[in-house]
Amino acid sequence: MRTEQLSPRLAALAEAVERTLAGRVERLSPWLNAGQLAYEVEAEHLLDVCRTLRDDEALRFEMLIDLAGVDYLVYGRDEWQTESATGTGFSRGVFRDRYVFPAEQDDHDTTRYRPKHRFAVVYQLLSITHNWRVRLRTFCKDDAHPILDSVTGIWSSADWYEREAFDLFGILFRGHPDLRRILTDYGFIGHPFRKDFPVSGHVEMRYDPEKGRVVYEPVSIEPRTVVPKVIRDDHRYEPELKDSSDA
Image 1: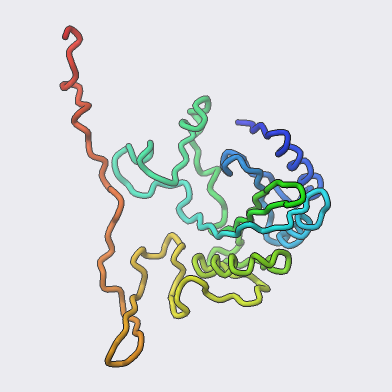
Image 2: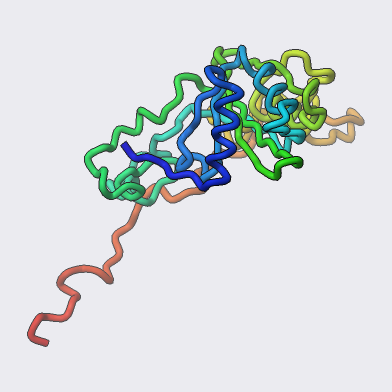
């Protein structure tokens, strides 16, 4: 099992977080989080943990920098089925342990990274007092009706971020003061960032001069694939085109 070496500064932060929040958070692997210190918290402990992160003198995370929804529907799988090259460098969103950890080439079980739940929310926190950052992740327990407690009472900056996560992912935030769409039209149907949402959407809108108003109609464009589905052979590298050994 690969062990991660934290910098002295991150190690000090990790020690403070884990001492203060013992039993309520679980540290996530830094290589899966771009080297940043990250923790997972159960949904029922979210508000308690967030208040402690903000108020504890050893932590003092006074600022919520960002909040984002995540859809893990096809996490760790190929985007499309094609030649074998797809799983070895030509596809996105696929774990390739043999490239990250050459010493562990026999360990290719990507299912161990796949979460048990579909939707999650990630919080990016900043401590102005101590000048350090931490990432917090929590999962919605119900895939069909994802819902979490709102943290607007802890960090007011979460207001529009939670509205964005609701609009794009359909994640509800219990206790939010004004949970409305923020990017799409108020009559929009669906949530664009869900991985089961069609790229072309469900409806289109136009101004009807006869009715004197905007009308909604079924999408009239044909869905199309904008990524290559076939990896073509490059004939420049055919063996018979190489120079002979006695040339």
